[in-house]
Length: 125
Image 1: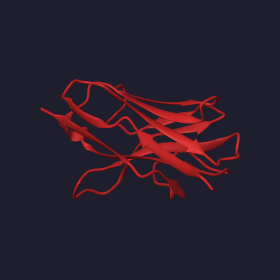
Image 2: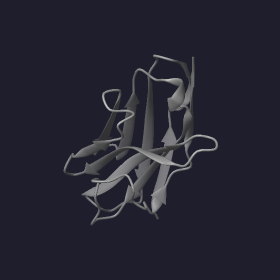
Image 3: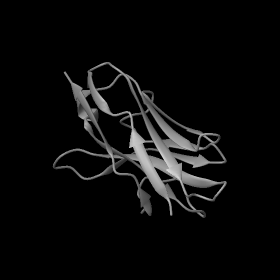
Image 4: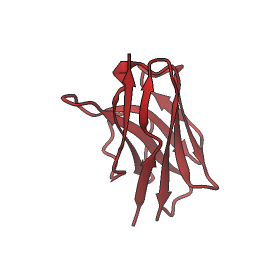
């Protein structure tokens, strides 16, 4: 059974940085897709960054390009999201998600089957 557990959220002032982690277990694939999504109160969930584990390709939402970096540590089976130059509009619950192959990171509009419980990020101005 696939389990995803996020950590690393918290409160930070605008301009600050946070690194989110997502520990994955029960996943037997070598190449697969993972991503970070976020949802603010009263807003729809949106994709933030995707990565094709095993190939290394990445996709970012325009709103975070140049500020956020998604990466994956194969040895630790952990997904990361380094968030720099944070803005108040980045405040949201952040979720990691995983999809089995065949999968695509060409678009954020994908129904990922596996989700973590979320970690809260709050950016104050």
